[in-house]
Each structure stands twice: as C-alpha cells, then as structure tokens.
Length: 419
Image (tube, rainbow, N blue to C red; front, side, top):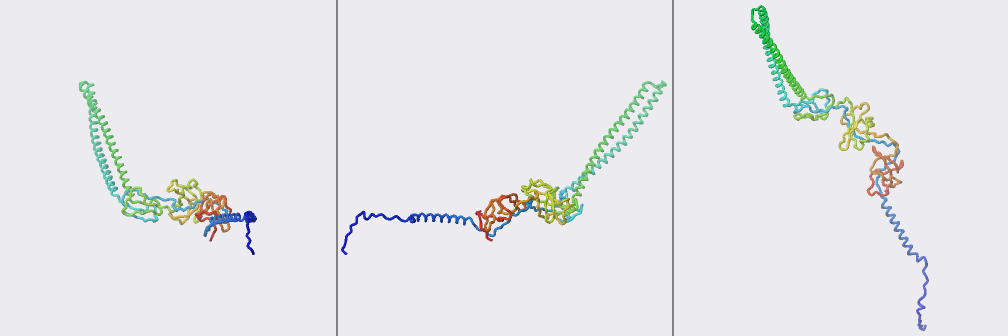
C-alpha cells in the first residue's frame, strides 16, 4: 500500500469525551462513609468492652421483706450485783497472807496481817501518856483529900474560937448589966466575937473556892485522861485492823498480795463478790448511741434469756459508755461466773416492716444488681444499719440480688459474673 501521509488539524484532536457513570462519582463518598461508620462502631464496641468486666466468685445477697430490728450487738461481761472493794485501812508491811485468789470466804474470815513499827511505837507512847496523866490525877486527888482534911481541922478550930468569943461576949453583957465590968471590957468582948465570926466566914469562903478550883483541875485532868484513853482505844483498834478481815461472805477476786509488800491506806487490794446476791451484765457502747439509750430497753441473750437496760453510767472513756443490764426482778440464771463474756442484742426501737439487705462493703448508695449474669450499677436509697442489716428505702425490690462483697476499684457500669 502506498504510503499516505495524514495531516490532522488541532480541531480534529479536541474531541469531547463522554461523561462517566453516576455510580462512579458516588463511590469515593460511599467508601468514606462506610469507613466512618466502621470507626464509630469500633469505638462503641471498644468502650463497651472497656466497661464490661468480669467479677469472679461474687458474694450476692437477696433483698427480702422482713422486720428491721434496730439493735446493737454487744459483748457483755458478767459482774456480781453486790461486791465490796478491799482497800487497805492501815499502813504497814505484809506479815502474813491467809487466803488465796478465788477462795470462798465467810464474813469475818482473816485475809492478811500487817506489821507497823510506827503504830507500835505510837501505841506505847500513848499508853505512857495515859499512865502519866492518870498518875497526875491520883496525886491531885491525894493532895485535895489532904487539903480538905486540913481545912476541916482549921474550920473546927475557928468554929470553937467563934463559939468561945460569943460565950465571952454574953458573959460580959451580963456582968456589964450588973455593973461588974466596964464598958471598955464589954466592947472588947464584942470585937473579939465579931472578929471570930468574920474569920470563920472568910475561912469557909476560901475553902469553898479552893475546893472548886481543885475540882475544876481534877475535872480537866479527868477529861484529858478520857481523851488519851479514847486515842489509845483508837490505836488499839488500828492495831486490830492490821489483821484485815472479810467484810462480807463471797468469793475473793483480784487479790494478789504478797508477804513483804508495803501497803498504804486506800490501796486497792482486791474484791469480794457476793455470789448469793445475783449477777448483772456490763457492756460498752459507742458514745454515738448515748442519746438513744434509755433504762428499760429490752435485750436478749440467746443462751440466758431476756434482760433490761438498768443503768447508763455517765462517764465516757475512750469514746465508750458503760451500761448495766439485769434480768427481770433480779432472777439471774444459775451457772454464770463473774468475768464470763456473753453476746446479746440490745433493742433500741420496736421492729418495723422493711426491705432488708445483709450489711457488706458492696451495699452502698450505688450498688450492683444482678440481671441474668450481669451485675449492673444502680442508684439505691438506704436507711439505717443495725445488727448486720441495712434498711432499703428505694431502688430495689424483694428478690433482687445485690453484690455485697467489695466493689472492684474501677467501678465500671457493669460486670460479667464468673463462678
């Protein structure tokens, strides 16, 4: 074929192309949309997987309808209703210990004996003072008796002189009337009679004053002797108290006295429990409950029956108050020993109907409720807690199961359970 040369113009080369199909234009947009949907779905799936964890061997409890008992669980100690503390009445060194801890004693039984050299010395000194004072009284009485005898003799002589003077006066009066003596002789006889009478009266007054003075002195000395005797009697009683005796019958407790030990007045040496007078329970209660404690509130011991709150001691020590609980009419059960521990429940208020859950670390305002095999977090409203129970006010129904064991630290919205 002969070669032909084609000359194409520019207009021939600028032909209009046909437009692409519409589906080709939407294909990139559709791919981008599908990619975005996949990304969102992946994020949601990842978030769900991040919040849905597994709890192994969860401790669950069912919500149940029952009575909410506002009670306190107490650990009480048995104590006797009547006991006497043994305090040292005298100071001294223990010479002998006559009883042992836990021994049953009769009233008046000797417990221990003290030796006090100071008291012995004081007793001897007071005895000597009493003897000396009594000797002084005896000397004073002897002197008074001798003085009285001398005074009686002097009075007798003065009475005789006064009688003689009066007789001489009468004789002179008669002689003067007959004119046998002068007026001067009569006046002399009268002066002698008056002087004898005055001397007798003065001697009688002096003797009465002397007797009263001596009697006052004797009375004062007698009172001093009585005071010394009373002091001596007290010392003798103190010496008797060196032998300490049991004030009541009962069992001795807390008695750890040893021979050779020194004691002072007021030292607490032990206690005697009157076991025949019954027992009571002593328990400690947190001071938080102090405003709600009232005498007469009932209590229950499973093994030993019903009791009542008898007394709330006012002193608060280390955040605790002591309460005394007693059986009705003092009829305490047999077989209880002082110091024995008992468990009991103290009822603060009357029971009332309520939804209940056992108390546990998982029972909170946001708790996990079992739905199928999933624990879902739920807001609930709780009331009071007492005696291991929690009052449910809202958010739960009877029969639902709630996680009572500790909640996982991440606090996810839900958890899968695994036995």
